[in-house]
Image (tube, rainbow, N blue to C red; front, side):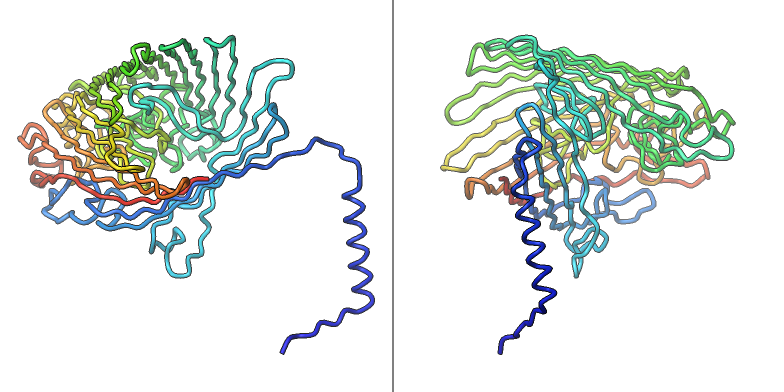
Length: 529
């Protein structure tokens, strides 16, 4: 039997007044231009099975490490993530954008909204920025939380900087062939909480980048020179604040990382009383990338990057370079290509700093066109960056067959990559615990050659081979199925002079890690609108 609702005369009067007020507001003359709202989004649901990516079968204490990965994931994982973008467009000269991210949700994880009940605070702001054009000009300005990156026509993933960050970016077109882009990115500021021995809270803790790119576009030819400078306060990456990371100093902010063999951080000098080693570190990067398509369907692309970080302390300095070349030819049935790269590596002396290309790293937004899981991989929720989030400290060669197809709506990309380290094997003795000045090199501990987010520290005696096949099937216009199968064969030098057994500082004998190859398969459903 239905429920009968009785309204009092007072309620009826209030309802009529509210309706009249709403009608009155709708009839008021407009005081601002109409705003059009646009919504975009992407849903990703992924199922993955394989090795977690630590490469270690048994650690130096003889404990079995199989079955878990760098983030303690199981062999089988189910995940999903949603990104929703809302754009408020007043005109072609003014708009505002906010991008929400829900997840990544790992099915079954209680603190990530994936367990029974599924309630959790997991909605994040990924982007939030204002776009506007300077009046009477064609200068475009973007202000707020946004993706800022440097170009690379070979890897499609910058080896120096590509991240979501707060800042301002400008685009200045001069004509149809030449334009100028500039940005200021504030990476960190007002995060240092201070301590009893160091400077006051929020003192010298900012990290800023300033960059310029000059895109040159002509028929059949593109060239983009770029440059970037950085200023990093002494407290910008202090260990007492556990949110700030940037790999120009090799490790992570918690002070436990030897991700690049050298735990380089101003806090490494804390034990000898020199908390404030420098007021500011200064950094400089420059690069040139381009592509030639005039002989289409033949394409040639190249890239060169150089970077240096100067702190005033030799052991904390860093400088290095990277170069890459790609050649491919597009047929009706697919695009075969060949490519190679070389990046400088560390010598065997930690006292003179590092010879690896410095980069700014915080969950890099790029996806590499040359790899699947060895570096940054594809745009899925899978386990990538197994060998490294960038190509720093390695050289290699690769073959790729891109977008070949034998069935309608189904295409594949196959690649084979060979990697070898360019870091001196003599550095490993410090990673394994040999004394170094001011203890700036921290040992990995029992699993020092297992992989974390930043990958492995490959020496000139270590090698790896990656084979990957990615298939995409267009189920509907907006829904595609992506399947990846990947395998990495790893050969580490297990001699006593490199990664083999050793006696640690406590006199305990450590055996060589029992390494294994890495493999995984993932199935992703990607819905875009």
